[in-house]
Length: 184
Image (cartoon, rainbow, N blue to C red; front, side, top):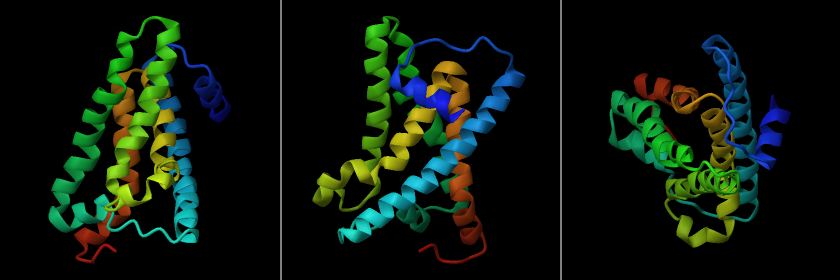
């Protein structure tokens, strides 16, 4: 599946799969595993590089969210609202690009804008703009998987992939907050 996503990234086309929902579930599970693995791996790379160059990025948006909102609010914002809105904004618009030449620009734009908007997760990102591509590597990779899911499976499936991704990554922190522990 990773080679199929990579080949698609190199040459995106607006060509959905013509398959049943049962097959879509199977593909969604594979995409979820790859997306989570990419997020962890690239998150580690990002952390190593920012630590090596001594970049102080300040508080992270997720940590701030845990300070401000109750557990159900965090769940709603990160696992329901953000996936629906972000998929509508970044990948819902892909429907309008019928011309193959323009579709690839729209796809790449959705991937990189999705990554770029996540720069605001870092309190002092403006002080480290030269690190921007590194800071948003996990989100940019997620944009690749989400764009693939959007085109091949459909918009609802990319929303579901996004929600599952966020939910899995937030689950440990939600558990600790529920247990009354402080999130670092």
